[in-house]
Image 1 (cartoon, rainbow, N blue to C red):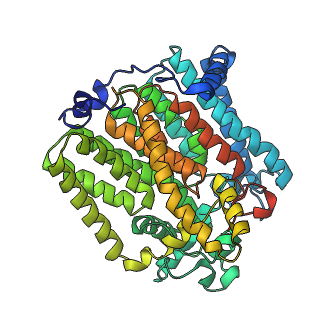
Image 2: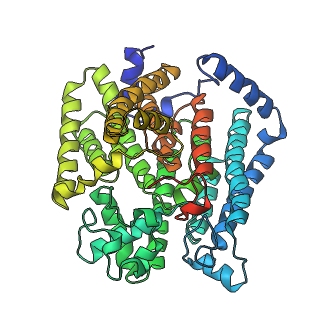
Image 3: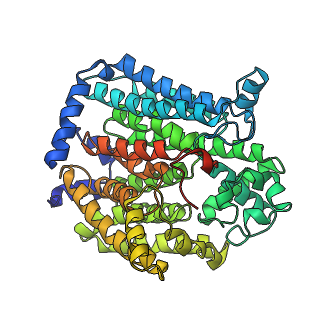
Length: 499
């Protein structure tokens, strides 16, 4: 199913803000999805008629889920005491320690994390169901409630991932004048005894940065604040990530046709607050740059709009390489409407910006770690089964299996994205539908995928009317979140990704 010319023109060519002109017309699901979708629909209808779909229980579950996550972070009182937290004491965690908070052992942590993450997902689902049944809270209250929660959790030790320690180490490397794409965390003075290196997951101490130069500048800013104190650098990262998350929520509040739904999906989404903010993930910055580029591309067709979009795409690409899906999503309506001049102009600016940010900062070395990183396959993934079979059929050439995986997953991604794109109504803006479909397909198909990689899909989904992709994106965030919260303690969690 192809969107009509009129619909595409409405999504690209109008000079006013068309996001406000889009009526919330979709039902759930917009298009029958076969037997699996029908079975899911039966479950959804049953849950929507339960108390879970009422505002008070839904908000309560959300608060309880985030409360359990925060409790885990507050109890990070000793190295390796908690399998889900870094052994650093941020302000509220330090306060909890002085007040006698208990140290959590790995088994106890798991007993808290599993229900906590699940409650976050159930709370989100309940709030969205309540909204579909008529609950219409003030969107500004939703936004400020989410902002208040973020303002609290950025003062708690990161939960569920060791990434902030790696970010801080890369920033420290840059602050000392070295190149984080060549110089490794284990190379810092003192090796494994360096206070920054000691916090890094042992699997990543010999791994260079795979993030873009803009991401490195974020890391550098935090490290300059922290100096020789890694906890302070991580706290700075938490605050900057929280600010980016809130800024993206503000853009959604001002731009969405349904600001209540947008607020629930992003600003007050307990699952995203846990994944992005409590883990200080760079994907929050990527989502901010991506949604800003999409909104500007929809607001007007002037040269200045295209220049701004190109710059933002370039900045996003210099954060993480998966920003290419934002570029493709913006290109889809331009190609369909034969807006070749705009496409060329935007693409040229994006290319120049990306080139400039990479090659006038750290040069070609910033790209060298990417090929090796792209060959990784996470556990669990259906590509692991593929690799297992290939390694047994041809054990003498294991690299051949990785090469074959690298050739197979991109066309599979595009095929799945096309399917998801066509599941959405032809009335929705093509740029939003395409970006959401591409980023969602990438999360499902890529050999290496983690739950916070869903950020771009969520931020675009927030501007779409109700549709059945919401339930699947929730599951695509929930399941890997339950499998990956080792925070640098691989022996304590069976779902920890391999090196």
